[in-house]
Length: 224
Image (cartoon, rainbow, N blue to C red; front, side, top):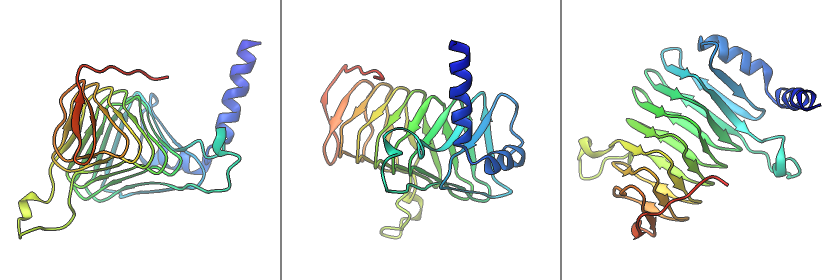
């Protein structure tokens, strides 16, 4: 009975995929057998022919939950996007999922590194113009914005427009957080809801506010 239940659950999951897009991108990206690219309905995928998406031992899932869970009974339609421009590069090790309405943009020549077993929740965005790295086991909540560039030049300082963003392992980022260029967030840190992160955060700290500041050290957290 347990085996049968697992089979039914798997079949129900598969029927929620946009199978045409799944197959197209799996072939187009030439993914290895140990990797998968799962696209759910209401997703926009645009990957330039000269871009690189390197997934190893994991699943990249786009717009997870659009037909399941508590979202199923709601009237709002969430659209997720994955756009990788010419020369852009995504390197993924392990599973990574974009929940309802979450989006990733990788600009020309930019590189996004995902170490896996993490999620980007509803309406959150990653905008990568130079280099962004996200460690293992990170929980990124709703309406979070992660960006490594100002996208505009201030005081004619062209060399200061973009700077890498590095997020360590097991980081919890709360709702409505903004993470700006040049920031490093240490392993195990917790970023409180509504915070604006403009400078680096030590490992194991709880930060809140605008700009975010440390209010507690040696904190720990775990997935529910």
